[in-house]
Length: 107
Image (cartoon, rainbow, N blue to C red):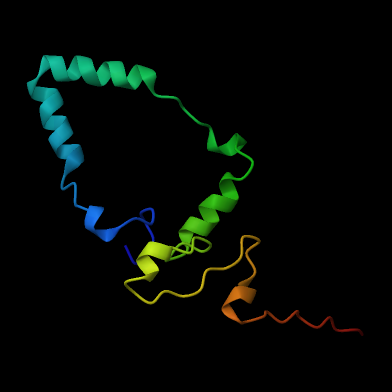
C-alpha cells in the first residue's frame, strides 16, 4: 500500500490474490468450459492504444514515483506518514521546495 502501486482504499478490503495467473492457467488447462468462458471474455476486451491517449504519458510518469507522484492517498495517509503529493503540473512546490533555475552564463 505504501508504495502506491494500488488505488487508495480502506486497508481492510485489501487481500492477496496469490498466484492468480498460475491458478487461471491450471483452470484453463483442466476445464473445457472454463476455456470457452475465457475465450468469450477475451472477445469482449476493448483494447486502448495508450500512445493515442492524450494524458497517458502524464499518468504514467506520475505512477512511476513511489508513492504515486500526484495522488494524495487520503485513506492510506490515515495509517502511515506519506510525503506530500506534488501538484498535477509536476512542480514540487507542494513539498515546500522550489527548484532553482540554472543561471545562464554570459561570455
